[in-house]
Length: 329
Ligand code: NAD
Ligand code: UFG
Image (cartoon, rainbow, N blue to C red; front, side, top):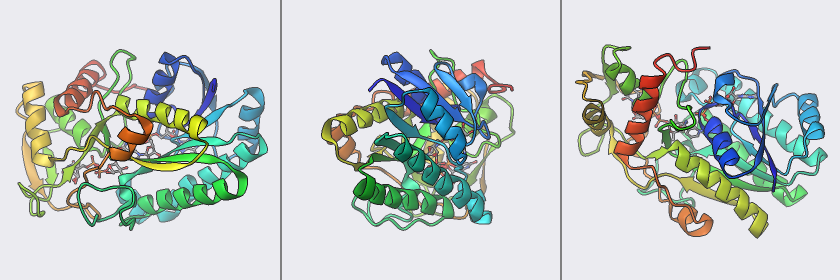
């Protein structure tokens, strides 16, 4: 495979994918409407600005470039917003995937790696979570991703389009060598918010609930480095090429950290006090999400290399210090 279309490649995880593909010698075409992404995040390849729901736009991209495989990051992903405006999420995430699969069919492209999420599991039955555990999302965002996974299954059966659905746990970290990192506005993720407090851009971090059934009462999550996510996508593309079969894979480090543990680790890494205040629970938050990454390790041959907590917070901290206003566009 030579040329990969990265939909949503101007976003946080997608831009790290573009850098990884370039490093590994692939040609990259990015399709992104820049609704949450940044021009400055696309360090390599050709950026085609347009909406993946626009079939004519995709036809132009597939005609102008000989695409061998697709990685689709393009989606909305704010859990809270998906509860207040579910049609926005079905309208972009599901319709975008329908449009992309239609274009792949029209242009004879039969491999796709898809950004799924731990939010497909909802409130898990057990920890660590494996791919055969019950999927019962607690919010529309997770529902849209599960609906797309099911659609991918039927498109494989009917059209022979092979897919890898990668269920990411909590993406964090940055690629400072490539000058890229996380810049969401508004920012909702714990680690960048904690680092904005360290930078003096916010007064304190609110801890969303300290009465969960966990070791210190705060929610436990599995934080996985964004460069490790990118390397897993490349392995998934190789898997599709080699095995000619589809699969669903968790991508997490296999370790869980509480909100308080993240704040404490960030205090050590940054040397800043990072004031914290307990706030009410956030609707829809499961108490604990920890991945079993056994399938990705054994079947894809994935080795998370940067997903130690201090590495993740350290790389994110470097990015925040060197880019206090993000991409400042
Ligand atoms: P992001 O918002 O930074 O990136 C999404 C990109 O897609 C942006 O560049 C945006 O402009 C683009 N986009 C959105 N809709 C589009 C459309 N209709 N047409 C063209 N481009 C469009 O998000 P992210 O944090 O990088 O997440 C990437 C993917 O990973 C998403 O699908 C998200 O649901 C999934 N995911 C993220 C996390 C996480 O922790 N960040 C966890 C699980 C799953
Ligand atoms: N949190 C706080 N204060 C904040 C922000 C977050 O206490 O200011 C807490 C949250 O309540 C949660 C934890 O920190 O317990 C992590 O929250 P994030 O918003 O960083 O991440 P989520 O676990 O809610 O969601 C992320 C992605 C989703 C994905 C999910 C899968 O944003 O797309 O991981 O695990 F579905």
